[in-house]
Structure formats: structure tokens, C-alpha cells
Length: 459
Image 1: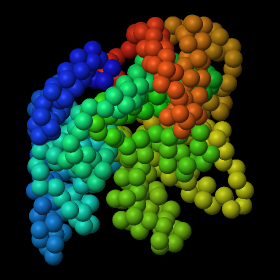
Image 2: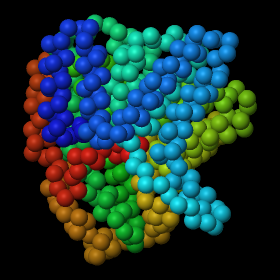
Image 3: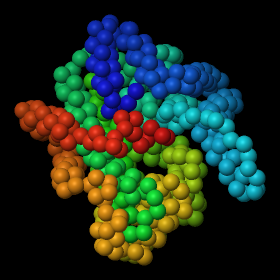
Image 4: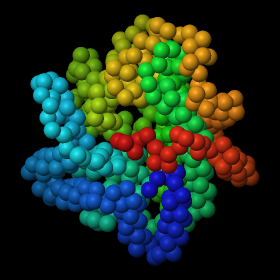
């Protein structure tokens, strides 16, 4: 079930009505059942993987807390089980293909479908176990913990929440709040606007350019810039709808994006982009490796390890690994030069990020290098106007005007976000209306539209 589908907009109101009719002590049980139903709309069998992850981390965490002096084996077993499942379903075929290329032998691959959201709920479960290992008291309420792992608004694509924030909210009595309902509705509408009016519209151009090897650099430059907009709007839209849905249920999820493309350095960009994953890697991997406490060289190695694994987390392909390593390398270079001269600014940071995202979007490393090489060598306007015109992708002046207007609204919203709470009540309702009309009139339903096509569903 997808956030931008008719199914979801029948499902969510029904859940809200039943949820607030029920007595508080039954609400978490209902939400748990609703969350599993939500997930089974993709694949019934793979819901068992969520249940296995939930049971194993719940039991191991209790054992870790009980047997403090002999707790390490329980952590190791739990990590091996959960990360092992993630490896089999996401990385086994990639590993066999990589080994085959290195050894010159073709290994038989397995017919495995990647379970939706497996990277997200696995990391959330593992993070909880590590927190307990470090001294946090585990919950004894299995329903609350199972809901923590499977809560439907953030189950498939995050944000990756921490138990210390979410479990107390599940344990508390939640009452219907009109302020939270209005705030949640605004987030949902804003998310749909970013997804359907901007991201899906931009995807038409990006998909057209990457459909085959182009020979004009301007097309790849346009695609690189537009993909940054596409992935930001697509992923942050999912987060907004998730946060809005949870808020209507009285649950606050963490903010996952803070105007990342206004960052003036790559390091700052990663403090604003996919914050839940960035902080997860910082707390559970970077600091475990020693962080910045063991000298410059070790710090730089740790950065490359973290960003290399972060890239691999996004997908079982070398393109994602290169993308991650580039972001780590950018930060090393930034650290080496920042005391001498401050060369990174908003524009340079955006350019570096766009170059790295070429590897994220390209279907192969070869295609990514072809795109970057074409940008550098062949930037002829005539090539755009003649055989490779974007008119072939049904790009009209109306399309461009809508995209520019939507992008301006997006930029203004990111700038004004800290002041939104001060906006008068009446103005908010006008904004609700305008967003709804924009989605209905300008929402993209063309040949490239796919209600299932949230980019981070693949991870």
C-alpha cells in the first residue's frame, strides 16, 4: 500500500476513526494489526521477516539486560540473525555477482524479491538492541515493542526512529487533538504536493535522459540538477506523509530533512539530509570505530568506511558504493582545506552533491562515467534543439512553468519553515485549499506516473 494511492486514503481515515473510538488500552493492539495489514498489501509472506526481527530483538534485549555480565553473546547472536536476513535478501546475489567477476566464474543467482523496507526496520531493531546493550532499560510490553518495529507510517521508508523517543509515546495515553490533526493534514498535503507536482514531474525528464546513452552534455547537466530535486522531493514527501499520518494518531516522528540544498558544505548537507540514517550511522558505527578520537588518518578512514557502508545500505550495486565514498571523500577534502580557504558554498556544495548523485541515479558505473564525461566534453545547444530535444519526452512550456512555480514554492517553504508556527489560523486553511487544488490540477499522472514509485521503497 502506497502513500500516494487511493488505497491509502481509504485506509488512513478508517484507521483514525476506529483508533479514536477504541478505549486507549486497545489502541496499540489495533495499530499493530493495522500496521501488519498495511505491510501485507505488498507481500504477505515477507511480513514474517518483520515478526522474526521483532521477536529476536525483543527476547535478546531482555536477556542482555538480565545477564549483564554475559550479555555480549546475546548481542552477537541477534546482530547475526538480523543482519544475516538483510544480507540474504538484499546482498547475496550482489555478492555472488561480484565474486564471479573477480574469480571469472558465473555463480548461480537466487530468485529473491527484495522485501519492502527491510533496511529500515532492520536498522531500527538493531539500534534498539545496541541501546539496551549500552544500558537502556528494555520494554517488557511486547505489543508496544512490536509496534515500534512495524508502525505503518514509518515502516517502509523511515524515518529510522529511536526507541527512547518512540516507545514512551506508545506507552502514553493519546487523545484526539485538533492542533495535531491540522498539523498532520498539512504535512500530508505538503508531501503529496512535493511528490505529485514536483518529483513525478521532474522524473519524466530524468528518466528520458537516462533511458539511453546521450551525446549532449547539457541533457546530463539538466538531469543531474533535476534528479537532486526529484530525490529530495520524493523522499522528503514520504517522510512528510509519514509524519503527518503519525501526528494524526498522536505520535511525533523525527524530522528527516532540514533544507539540505541550502547547506554551505557537504558536511552540513549530511546534517540536513536523511537525518535519521546519518545519526544512526554516527551513533552506532562511526563512534564504534573510534570516531575522530584516534587522529586525522583514522578519522578519515572511519569516514570512508561509514559512507561506503551507507552507500551499500542504499542498494546492492557499485553505483551506490561510489556515491557513498564520494560523499566521504568530499568531507575529507573539506576538512583538509577549510583552515586555509573556505571554498565550499551553497552553489559548490550543490554541484558536488549533484555529481555524486549521478552515480546514485545511473544504472551502472559505466553509465555514470559516460554522463560525467559527456558533461565535460560535449555541451552543444544544437544537440538539445535537434535530435535530443526534451520535446520527445512531452516537455511543454506549461510543464516548465508549473515546475518552476512549484520549485519556487518549495524553496520559499524551506526558508520560511521556522516561522510556520506563527502563521495565522485562517492563512493555514487557505494554504490547505491551495495545496489540494494544486495537487488535483497540476499533480502529474502522465506516462511516467506510478503510485508505487517512491524512490526509497527500493531500500
